[in-house]
Image (cartoon, rainbow, N blue to C red; front, side, top):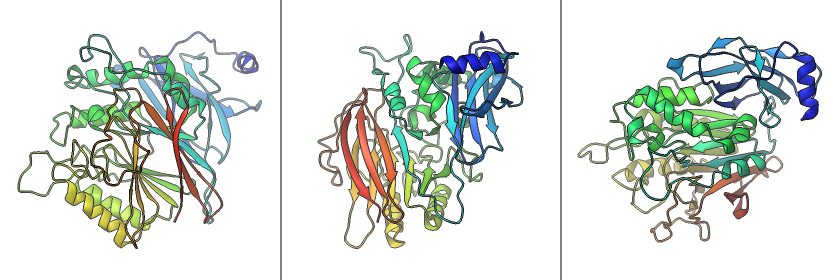
Length: 436
């Protein structure tokens, strides 16, 4: 760290280290030739990033300057292009020509270039959901609902290649839902957590949403301000460019190594629970058709489907896919996967304030997995007595936790190792899954 600061004074002599930022920086999506970087300032300021190959003495390159504005919550997001595949880069934030001190090393690594031969590099990624950050005056009465924020440092210390947030990444309070500015306040406040700083600045971040960061509790497509909610989501996350522009909400997909990730939206087009005498949908009919097409053409070894609520859980309770008349759509998707023999499909879900693994396993059909990981910092819920007939024995966890998934092995011998850790980084449970 001392050497890095010394180099900053020598090489970036035109910048003085005195400026401050509100939130970030954050690494967003990372590809072979480009990366998205994000930061939020306290007021309107000129923002740039400087970057270069890590450990080199080459000149720093600068992104185009941009003035942050109140109407975009003083956020700045830029896509750094023309990078080299498989390289490590160090980066810093520059505010009004003054360089910010880094949080940790502030290094990102571009992915390897995918040629005709499938990339089977090892991949480790963290997952979690339900991150409630207390704010006095806006919280529910009684005992603070959020806590054990050190879990974010534990995730950082586990050194994943990326992190995937599975929804309820912030918790809108009732007072937040009326306007764009109040929604932005919830994100700004939640991001301004010391334990988050190194995680966001050093590990690429991807996200979906669920009800609490989409709208009110148990919200659906009837939420009046859902277009504002999507706008705010895009201001504070840096997911890949949307691959399906005809779809609503936060639907997206990307590939890392031989793994493909499908980021689903289970709120924007969701039917109301009380809808009668009409087909009911969680995903929306267009998104469901898109997912089927994507799964059918995917050549990825593991196909990870990220969605806010539990998919496989057979207990028709709360907002499970098997509850409230959505079970027909659940079965339709299961039948599609089985009929087309689509192997190694792993749903990654949150919402429930407990963790567990469910496995669909019927003779002659491909296995389907549903790994639920929740909560990160919100309150917990013990659901061991729920009638989930597909739950793996011993996988139920009713304490704050995060997941670490590791894909490794030679081609045609790939293994997914699932590990669940507590908020202090101690492993609670693990299970290896061999690719079919």
